[in-house]
Image 1 (cartoon, one colour):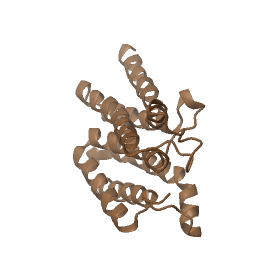
Image 2 (cartoon, rainbow, N blue to C red):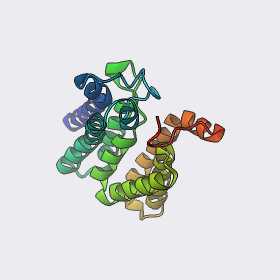
Image 3 (cartoon, one colour):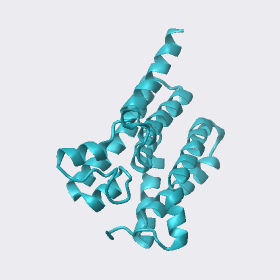
Image 4 (cartoon, rainbow, N blue to C red):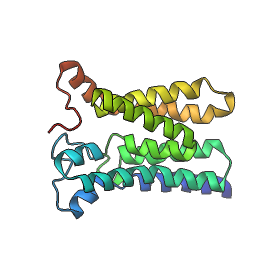
Amino acid sequence: MGVILLQIAAVIAAYLLGSINSAVLSSKALRLPDPRTAGSGNPGATNVLRVGSIPAAAITLLGDLLKGYLPVLLTTVLTDDPRLVAAVGLAALLGHIFPVYYHFRGGKGVATTLGVLLAMDWLLGVLWALVWLATALVFRYSSVAAMTAMSVTLGLVLVTPSEQMWTAGALVVITALIFWRHISNIRDLLAGKETRLGED
């Protein structure tokens, strides 16, 4: 029973950490527009860069990445239970997307996903980042880069040996969440209205 309670506490702690919104806090600290009401309305690094500043966007990116990375890393250090690692990673991401501190209205989870992946398997995280960067450089759409990176990473995990089962399961859910959070971007892409990186 004690172990189960500790596992539940770890998942809850990851969710609460994930609920901290780096975009809102960095923008407020630097006296910039609230990213929830300015630009695209998404409290994430891309929108902070668009309506705020490079330093604020960098702080947001780092904060969002760390709140996915740290709880998963700590879990991998303390246990070799892949189920708990997957649950903690998902909890951190769900906290970012549905933050309890902000009426369950959060960001799209891209940087937090990268943090989770880097802690689960740094090679997967590096692959994800490289695919994101290459796609962003070619197409200049953050949304396309995120969805492409998720698809490639998930595809790779699904064809690896069965010991990756829990990682694969977590990535299926994460990929579904990322695509769901980008539905409006998909609509804008189809309508030719999606904003490119570097555009206002």
